[in-house]
Length: 325
Ligand SMILES: NC(=O)c1ccc[n+]([C@@H]2O[C@H](COP(=O)([O-])OP(=O)(O)OC[C@H]3O[C@@H](n4cnc5c(N)ncnc54)[C@H](OP(=O)(O)O)[C@@H]3O)[C@@H](O)[C@H]2O)c1
Image (cartoon, rainbow, N blue to C red; front, side, top):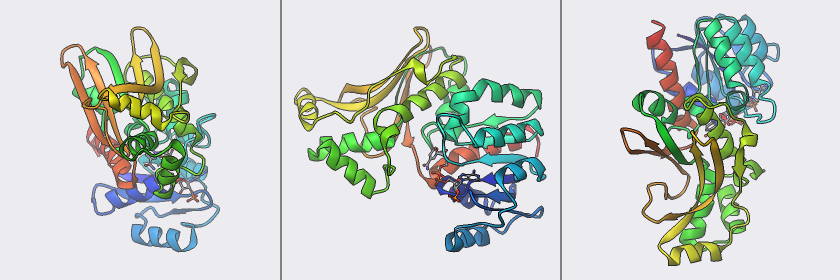
């Protein structure tokens, strides 16, 4: 299966790594923000990654993401560029070009999926191809396919998730070490868990975007970010956490969703310390309350290079098997 890899950052490198020695895949084109490379026989992935490391580029400036999407002969476009939560661009345009040409798309980019899922899904259907996005929510945790396939036929009554690893890290460090919010955030930054500008993480926006994706893609809703009530963790004090602990509870940033009531919220909540959603460090978790299966909780790594690439690999293999490559 011929892949065009758009984005060679953390996730893109992970994808290159997991497909490198798999004979089912060949990366025929790749692009970063400044350059691109194309080889119909398959790019030499080690050379590509080494070149990127040494020069910051992977090829020549004339091969842009748009040009690759529009001109190269590939089967699947793997779109792993940064999330733009306001417009979805430039990923949105790249994805549309690929779908319009009848090419499958796999992405971990939350922007286009949270903003334009229905439009993109229709475009994929019209062109007889797949649009897959397991990596957009909870990294390695197979929550989208887990609900769609594993829990198929079950009505989802409610869903509760820890969907932001940065917030989970901060809260678990405040709880375990008595750190202040500012100290825990600084620690998260030092360890590379928090972005230079962590606003979207700590004010609940990132978790809310993921909740919108789950609502629209697996629960048949039609909501936007504005439908999610949001409260972040930036005003939480060590005293609030100590008070919770004195009653056998703790605080986590929970994204919750009740499909029938169209009730979507992200906010810090009190949870019993033995709740399956109470996890340390950057883990993600989602509990799904279902009609027949009862409560099912998915737990795992919500971010990371090969971890997120694992979600992308599962989408690639779905396409590989379903479309008979
Ligand atoms: N990292 C994770 O653990 C994780 C988990 C789940 C989902 N995601 C999502 O996956 C996506 C990728 O994340 P990441 O962590 O890999 O990001 P990243 O490390 O910042 O890498 C982004 C890559 O995209 C390239 N890029 C930027 N603009 C581009 C453009 N216009 N055309 C072509 N390439 C462009 C960058 O080029 P340069 O190298 O030239 O800068 C870089 O190679 C994001 O949407 C993110 O939200 C990430």
